[in-house]
Image 1 (cartoon, rainbow, N blue to C red):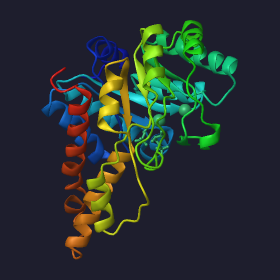
Image 2 (cartoon, helix red, strand yellow):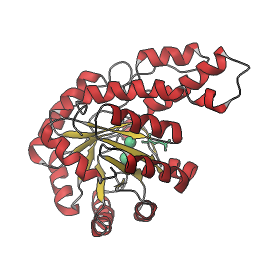
Image 3 (cartoon, rainbow, N blue to C red):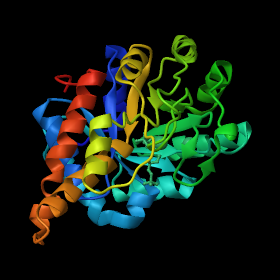
Length: 305
Ligand SMILES: O=C(CO)COP(=O)(O)O
Ligand SMILES: O=C[C@H](O)COP(=O)(O)O
Ligand SMILES: [Zn+2]
Ligand SMILES: [Zn+2]
């Protein structure tokens, strides 16, 4: 069933488990996400960035909405990294049930102002809101953030931010970063910071940049002709600890990008004469489903629907 992000994340925070928020860019990724959630009786959030909206538009949003409405587990359609009030409102008009306003690159007061505008409008329409405070490294939807410019979320500032904006859930910078290169080796996750924020805030917390970038998928990517450097993701143990301390929404995009691409590359490498799109793109769904299942088991959302 199609629900709001709050309907999914408030129980997750209370139940001390995480819910995967998986980015989609096409039908096959959407099917892998929602069918796996259905099979494992797990709530799930399907998210589209502004780039995905540009790529798939209302066509793709409608695929998500239709699969979500026909699902028997809770599914939210979420705008990932919305860059403006207008972008958030446009997503709501498209049928999104949760929107992020990411004004974390603006000065604190401006972030508050922009976020509060979106909260007031979204709440008037019964839609949930995610905001962000602090700055991840890596590449975000609209800006490249050099590691030196990244900064972790200040717990006291987070309290003030939530009080003044009314956001339903808050993305915090805790050491994760977007993309396949999250640092040399295991990224450092500031669990002390998470646990301080957990004590001060009762709303669901969000971890961006939470792909695990599994070595097995990276190897399959290389073996099927892909080129990738020293790729590292967040460790399962770090995610499990974070979900015990307030992290309820866990964002995953890179892992599905790698899995989808591995699925396609392996078909094209093994059967160079193949040109049936169903045979080229279809097998990737299974590769993605395995990644999604692993994440749902790590986060503890299996059976929580
Ligand atoms: O944060 C994300 C989407 O908002 C995705 O992070 P990854 O790049 O680690 O998948
Ligand atoms: O955080 C960003 C997401 O991974 C989406 O990235 P994208 O803008 O390439 O779709
Ligand atoms: Zn951001
Ligand atoms: Zn993100």
